[in-house]
Length: 278
Ligand SMILES: [Zn+2]
Image (cartoon, rainbow, N blue to C red):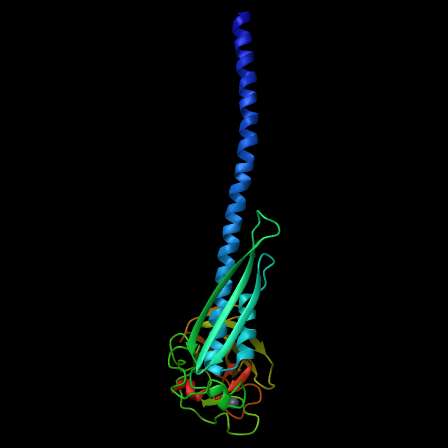
């Protein structure tokens, strides 16, 4: 009996020993694996952000030829991360060709002082520089050709924002920043391109009335104005697809008759929407 108890006691003692060995070996292993997973996640996110910075900088530079705005858009598309840093983003326009290159510093979490630098670059032709011909952007890279030949916006040209004939254009009167489409109140308004609804603003019976701004990325936005506040069917932050109904036309705000006021903005500047729609 005594021998039996002693044997059990030994077994328990051994088991206890074995358990602490397990704890000592497995805990660092778990830590090591989680660090590796974390490092991998940082790498993936940094590479994704680097590529969106390059993509959007290329998009703006190829549409506008404006190197400064393109760089700004690229940096804002990269976003802000505490884990890694955009070290360099260069946008160059040379002989009708945009080249964007980026360097991103990714710290190695196992080694405190070391950082890995991820580099990537891409190039694209500068499209017909319509933005420069509207009086902004640099004139470099202007070389003719069809504007919006499909490279600048996904899906090519913009889709019709409303099924109505165009009325007063951007040059119709001083200070007019868009294209008007006269249409009966309640006519459907569609997203001209896929994107994210940046804002739905209600100015009451002033100015644009109730209006929607959609951000298509790469510094390109569209604006739809003169709705009544109950007419938008989308909200800020919502993703919309090209051709999706976003609201109905009204006669609200500073409007002389029922119509849709439609704007295309590149890098914040309104340009003539008509070349995008033909
Ligand atoms: Zn208008």
